[in-house]
Image (tube, rainbow, N blue to C red):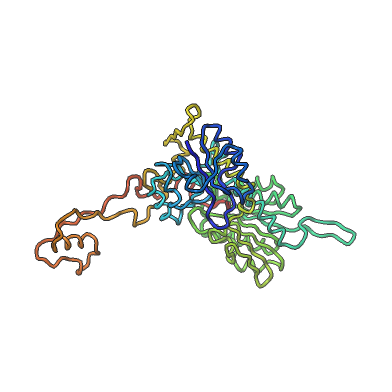
Length: 448
């Protein structure tokens, strides 16, 4: 059982999918570990530490050759997996929505693609939840970044020269990222308020010493799996009115609402930003999906005409590469351990296990997840015409199979053209997905 870890190729990605700690943990279970040279350098894990943990180091080609498992932070390119073992597991964050063509290309390599962000929110899977581990750090860093830009003190200070009032921080969304942002802002001495469309979140907000803000018109918008359902138009209007009145009095606003596979919901309009005082700061943790704030620009700092600074980071967890990698690697190792027969020290995958069924995207050359649509070009390929003599008649028949049904495509001969075969059926396992969502419904959630 060979496990491979490659250096991340996505620009700006500083994390790594395995640390010396998790390498040693998996080597103890019988794994042969191979790590690409400098894979952990940006997260401050030197090659020497991987070697000491039992890993071999080498080039990308050497590392992946014959690998049964590839661990990754971001979705890899199909070309990087050419030499892996047949049916190898590729485990990591796959971001499949909107990238179906890339998923199909990976399926064509024959690998079994596992999307860790699809891990169901059940008790046994909490230790494997990459969204929560990374969102926790994102919420913390959002407050640190906001404090650095704010240019004023966060806590109340009483001095001989007078009192400095505490900063007012408003957190929109009380999921994992939001709750950590609340806790961090409170530790820095700010006055914190927060809102969420789920009534149950109020208790969590107040337990951290913040004030929960929720419109009376919105009783509760809790959905399944701990996420929120989509609001009705009337509920959206009521919530927007509440937010508009509250934001104008805030110094710092942090937004955390994301919807899997969809653009982020807009929570803060340009008019709301215009109502804020000069020097105020907005941190939009949903920038990667278009942002919760109307003026957000991904990975840019925007300063409005009225002096409000808007930050739109797209990889906040990557700002804390060492901590983020440690947590992420443990998530992956915990899941991989459920796939290993500890007595035989080999992979023993139970394809009916709920964790496996929820996260596997591709298998045996096909897209198998019900929520991921195969691209049209890959979903139905025309059957190649049978071999025939190269006559004018056979060429005409071939044209009728491949060209659009137009007058020009019809054969000129009077006799009937060869009957065209129907397009080949969709690859096995790539059945048309059902309308219902997977276990993790598309619904508002916190940023990664």
